[in-house]
Structures are given as structure tokens and as C-alpha cells.
Amino acid sequence: MENGTLKVVDSRTNASYELPLFKGTIRAADLRTVKTSADDFGVMSYDPAFMNTASCQSAVTFIDGDKGILRYRGYPIEQLAEKCSFLEVAYLLLHGELPTESELKSWIDAITHHTMLHEYFKKFLEGFRLASHPMGMFVSAVAALSTYYPEAKNVLDPEVRKLEIYRLIGKVPTIAAYTYRHGLGFPYVYPDNDLGYTENFMNMLWKMVEPKYRANPVLARALDILFILHADHEQNCSTNVMRSVGSSLADPFVSVAAAAAALSGPLHGGANEAVLKMLDEIGSKDRVPAYVEHVKAGHGKLMGFGHRVYKHYDPRARIIKWTADQVFKVTGSNPKLDIALELERIALEDEYFVKRKLYPNVDFYSGIIYQALGFQPAMFTVLFAIPRTVGWLAQWQELLQDSEQKIARPRQIYVGHEARDFVPIEKRGAAAAPPAR
Ligand code: CMC
Image 1 (cartoon, rainbow, N blue to C red):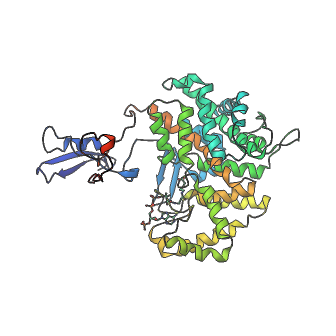
Image 2: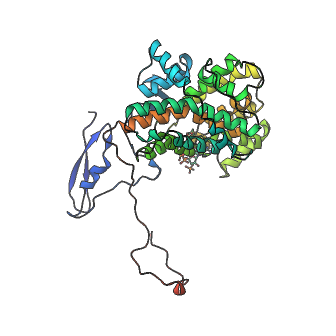
């Protein structure tokens, strides 16, 4: 039986309740019927870090963490990575179906015609110090777009949403490329509408004085695959921020900026940069066993390992390893690969990691590829944010079309002081008892 009920007996009152189950879930609000008296607030669920709470119903991405399965709109990630372009996958995530040939053509055309930034935007970026972290610039720049498109505040208008979605997907590579060139002191390169999404991004990153930039097709395809793999990952930390900020009906530019800020942390998208720092710190293959022991002794974490949902090999990590091989055939191998492979080998055999089901995640190998492509580690999380913008927007659209959703507003268990009287400043300082927890 798919649904059924959950029988609960309240030991305080001996009353029993039947809570409806829906796909193995009870509604937290139904717990409010469990009360000791008519004026009792009712039972709440307590779930710090959302360890066991579904916050929405979503049809975008499916993950089975125990089996290592990832699907976008029902399609296995392996098939999409092999057969699709990133923009095709972006269409799928946002529209629910793969595009026909003509739908894909007009989709690509719409995105391509929204890649330019307002000329004043350059002045805004010039205000950043040369050594500014590109992710800080990216977050600020995406938020600043909100000031250029004030109509974006009409988030309940589907036509406005459509336009802002084109703009965001079109402009994030341009912003990313500008943050990159800013750090190098190079002039910004305008988008080239003759080129595909990834090739154009590479053009804006690396074009110098040549009249036309031509990306290496193997490297362009590798970047496109990386974009596909990073496009969505259901209710992760940054997507939860996108939905939470979006639930206040904030415009999509500031909402994406907030989501990107969440992505920047080292436990989330910032892990790819942290992996490279870790591999640098390890330095050589023979020092891997000592580093693993150091982590096991409680000194930090193995970055790029572990996942809240995957208790199995991350399917994206497998595709990334294959992609790395293709890239290295063009660029030559990255010496850090040997250290990473050794780290993976030792960790996957070690009792500590086996017991905790810690496997390499998407961030473990991606940085090694990015570095081989010529990026500094500080750019890595920006490269994650470009494709994830699509996932954030797909989840945001779904949120705004979901009649059950309201402004996100969790409850708390108050553990502070009971009511107490104000103390004048001259009488303060006597050791106050801490609140009982
Ligand atoms: N290295 C060593 N020990 C680890 C690691 C790790 N990378 N990850 C988890 N553990 C241990 C953790 O100390 C805990 O041990 P114990 O039970 O003895 O206290 C146990 O494994 C369970 O970990 P947790 O911290 O309760 O798991 P979580 O679901 O809260 O955290 C995570 C998930 C991804 C934040 C965590 O695994 C981590 O910090 N990994 C390193 C950072 C990283 O690679 N993040 C990228 C995640 S994938 C892409 C993305 O989301 O952006």
C-alpha cells in the first residue's frame, strides 16, 4: 500500500491518532492534532539541518543515494551527459520535457540574445580590487542585475519569469568571464553570438587579439558535460536557499545571488576549490597515507568526499573521471590526478570511510579538470554556479507554481530566558545565570 496511515499513541494522554501517510511521509502540520489539551499548541517536529524533512514536492530531479542514481526529469544523468548539450538539458530541467528541434533552436536563440551585460556593468565590476575572490564578485554582480531589470519583481507573471530566466542563463557566463578577466587585468570580451553556450564562455574567458576565438572541441565538450552534471541536485543547501528567498517573492536575481552565496561555502560548491588546496597540501602520492590518518584523527575532512544523500559512489564523479581522461589527452595530465587517485584508492579501502559510506563526490575530480583547462582554484565554484543557475531557476519556477507553498518560515524550540525585568546599566555585570537548555 503506497499511502496508508501511521498510528501514534501519545503516552501523556494515552490518546491514539491516525496520521495519513503520503509516499512514506507524514505532514508535520498533522502532528499539531496531537495535544494534551484544547489550548495546547500540539506536537512539532524538530529537525536541525533538515536531516529527515521533505520541504516540497518536486518533479525536477530524482536521487537514490543508496543506489547512486541521479535523474533529471526521469532521464538518467549518464544518458544526458553522453547525448545532450548543456542548453538541451537546461530546457529539459525548466520545461519538463526534452525539446524538439525547433524548440531547441528558439531556446538557444533566446539565451544567446541575452548574453550581453549593460555597459555600465563594467564600471560596477571595476570597483572590485584586483585580488577579489571571483565568487564574491559573482554573487554581488548577479544581485546587481536586479537593479537593471526592476520589472523582474513581478515574479507571479509567467512572461516576466520567462524573460528573466533567459537573462540569467544568458548572462551568468558573461559575469563569470568578467570576474576571471578582472583578476588578470585583461579587457573584457563581449559575447559572440556565432558560438554555442560553452564555446562562447571560453571565448569570453580566453580570447586575446585573434579576430575569432575557436575553442578546442574536446575541451568545449568536456566543459559542457561538467555543466550538465552540475545543473541540478534537488534540495541541496543552495537550492533550499533559492526556494526560501524565492518564497518571499524576491526577484530571481537576488534569489540566485543568495543561492550562489550558499554554494560558495566549502561544505557545498566551495569544496572543489578546497580539494585542490588539499591536494597541494598533500604534495605527493607517498604522503597520502599520512594525510588520511590525519583526517581520521579528527583534523579536518577529506574534501570532495562524503555526501548527505549519496551513501554510494556519486554517479557524477564516475562521469567526471571519464571526462578527465578526455581532457588530459589534449592538455597533458595534471600531476594532482595521481595524488587524487591514490587518495581515493586508500580511502575506499579504509574502515573509517567504508563504515561511514564516504565516497568521492562531484567536487573531488572536477577541480583537477578545471585546473587542466587553465583555471585558478578560486574560479572553480563560479564554474559550478553557472550551470546550477538553471537548477535554481527550475526549482524556483516549481515553487511559484505550487499552490501548497507559502513564505518559508520554520519554527524553533525556544531555549532562552523566561521573561525577566530590565536591569539598569549601573546594576549590570553581576554574573547572570545562563538560560537553562
Ligand atoms: N572526511 C572525513 N570524514 C567525513 C567526511 C569527510 N569528507 N564527510 C563526513 N565525514 C564523517 C563525519 O565526521 C561523521 O563522522 P562521525 O559519525 O564519526 O561523527 C560522518 O562522516 C557523517 O558525516 P556528517 O558530517 O554527519 O554528514 P553530513 O551529511 O552532515 O555532511 C558533507 C555531508 C558533504 C557536508 C560532508 O560529507 C563533508 O563535509 N564533506 C566534505 C566537503 C565536500 O566535499 N562537500 C561537497 C559535497 S558534494 C557537492 C555539493 O553539495 O556541493
